[in-house]
Length: 598
Image (tube, rainbow, N blue to C red; front, side, top):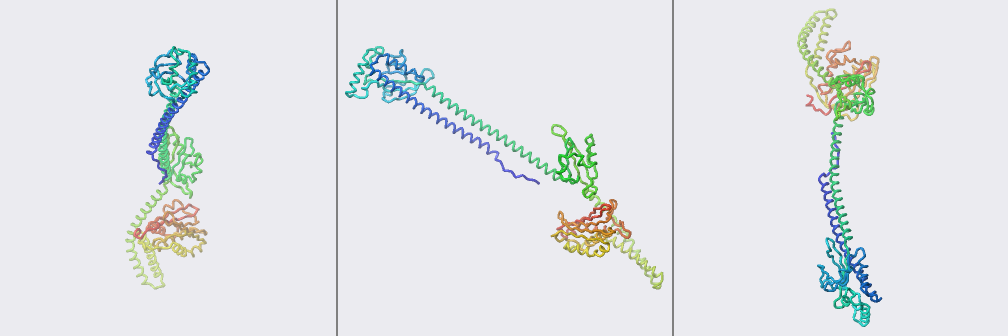
C-alpha cells in the first residue's frame, strides 16, 4: 500500500570504524611521543654538551688570561670556579688529576679529596675533546656532566720555542708555591699528567619539559580515547534515534494510510470541538473538501443530527452504531451509521472525540435488491403455477367461443360477441405468456456487439414517438469503448422500455439524455429524463411485477428489464426525486466470456 525508499545504514561497521580510527590515532600519538622524547633527549645532550664545552673553554681562557695578566694566585682560580658554578643551571665544577684527586673545586672543602664517582675511569676520561654523560647524584637527582682534559697553558698545544717560552713565562706567573692548599701548580700544568675538568649541570628543567611533553601526550591520548568513546556513544544514540524516528515515521505512515484507505469516514475533533482530521470518505459524506473542514468548529461543518449526538456524548452518553440520514450531493438521503468515542492520551488526559461514519447506502441497496429478487422469485413461481392452471381453461373457452361464433351469421351481434370473447382470451393468453417468460430462466443469445450500433438502433426505434412527444434526444458515447458480449435483442428490449418510460414521463416535452461510459471495468448506461420524477415510495416497487403508475400499463416492462440485466451479470438502479426527473443507471461488466453468463 505504501513504501518509503531509504538508504541502508551499516550499523555494525560504523562503531568498528570509530574504534579503528581511535586506535590508529592513539598509535600515531604514542609513536610521535616516543620520537619527541628521543629527539628532545638528543637535543638536550647537544645543547648541554655545547654549553658545557663553551664553559670549559671559557674557563680555560679565563685561566690563561689570568696567567698572562700576572694575576695568578689561588684566589684567582677559586674565584673563577665559584663564579662559573654560581650560574643557575651549573651544579658543580672541579678539576682532578688522572688519579682522581681533586685539585680545584667550586666548593673549597672538597679540594684535596679524591673523586669517587662510579664512572671515573682514566681510559674513558682522558680526551682533548669535550665529552658528556649522565651521572647519578645524591638521592634521585641526576646530572649532565661534561668533561675534557684541562688545557689552560699554551705549551699544551705545541713544543716549539715560542710555546716553551710562553710556558716558562706562565710558570713564572704561577710561581706562588702551595697555591692550592700546598699542592704545586706543576701538577695542574704537567703535560704528562694533565688534569681533567668536570662541569655538572642540572637536567631538572629538561626533565620537567620532557615530563610536560609526556603529560601532554597522555592528555592527547586520553582526549582521543574520550572522543572515540563519545563518538561510539553518540553513534549508538544517533542510530537509536534514527531507528526510533524511522519506526515512528513508519507507524505514522502506516496509520495514515490505514485510516485513509478505510471505507469508512473518520473525523476527529479536539477538546475545543475543532476538527483536526477528516478523511476523504467523511468529507464526501459531509459534502465538503478536506481543506475546508480542518481547524473549523463542528458547528460550522457537521449537520444538526450529528451535532446532537456529539452533545450527548459530551454529556456522558455513549453513541455506538447510531443510524442517521445524511443529505448527499445528489440531494438524496443516505443512511449513515455513526459511532462516537473518546480519545484518551497516554497520561489519561482527554484529547477529543473521533467520529466513525459508515455509509449504509450500498448495504441498503443490496438488501433492497435481495428483497426484489426474492419477490421476483416468489412471483415467478406463482406465475408459473397460475399460468399452467389458467391456460387450459382459456383454451377451452376460446374453442367454445370460436364454435359458437361459427353458428351465427357474420353480421350478427352474437357473432361479434363470440369474436370479442376469443380476442380477450388471446389477450389474457399473451399476458400469461409474458408472465411465463418472466418466471422461467432466461436463455441468452450472446454475441459481441458494438455499443454505437446498439444505441443507435434503439434510438431509431423510438425516434418517431420522441418527435411526437416533443422530446429532444441527447446522446453522448465515450470514445474507444470496447465491444461487449451481450444478448443484443434483449438488451435493446431493455433500452426501449426505459426510453419509452422516459418519453411518457415528459408530458409537455423535454430532454432524454443517453450517456455511455466506462467506469471501474464496467460499461455504464446513464439514461435520464426531465419528467415529473418518481416518489421515494414508488422507487422501492418500481421493478416489482405488475406495479405500474400508468393507466394502461401491465407492470412487467421494468421487471423483465431488471431480469435481463441481472442475467447479464449487471445491475440497474434508479435515481429520482419528485419534480426533478429520473435517471436509470445500467452497469454491465466488461471482459466477461460467454461461459460466465450461460
